[in-house]
Length: 353
Image (cartoon, rainbow, N blue to C red):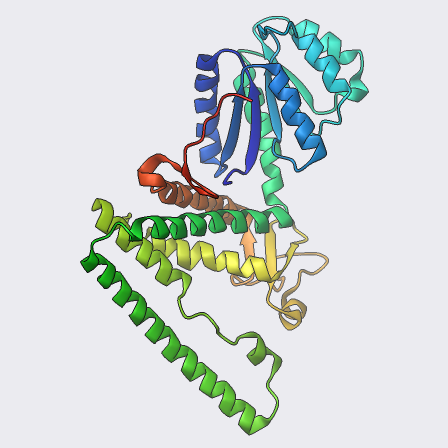
């Protein structure tokens, strides 16, 4: 799952849905946001999905609902509003229609306390209102937990695709190609083992000399013989073998050296929002925190350094780079187009309950 925002869209005109979705996606892409859309034509599916969400994890942040649905079960927009009153829906809902706007507002006005997070738009203002709701919900991506979660989710999904691609495609390579990759892995392991062995010998010598290790020495012991970078190089090489494609120069280097390094920092460090609300600060340990933590009246003289802060502007750029790299990696799902599922490679549809 690679989405940042989940949208459940109830609309019986597929052409309108497709057109409006394309416009909203362009806006989301500019902001570094990935949307997971679920399109349904029958309002009964809306209630089924929201009921699941009430009982379980939240999948949808926003619902777009055509008030003037032509449905075989006889439900109207007013029926939908009445049923929603009975449910504990924590999702923003936007009702839209070419007409009936005053009717929708009057229906909602009758019981305002039941309709927190409900919005109304006509077709002409739908684009503006939908962008407003997207921007509102995207603000959650600026909280500490969601900054950490987004980095973990996006990079973990990329790693999953990379590993799945290697597992699927390695068996289809020629013997000569398999030997080349096997020798590459062998050299990686030798190089990494040599480095680890040297580090291990230094630690052993340190213990024999001083009897007790310093805490930072204990926390920095290395134990990985095949690094993540090595795996992405194998992924890149198999892509070249299989399709003669070459990933855009520097994309993997930028991803590993910038995005993954930041992921590793923010995943394992203490985080806090700067008192000026301008930065996410991260600290490696208690000594680091005591030297650099944000003062009560934050200013340019605060102890922040380039190594322990991420500003809003940089976070927006990083989000966009994460989405762009994810799109590149996803291009190689199931021979460029399928979806790697938990039990194999499969396609996903948007319609239906």
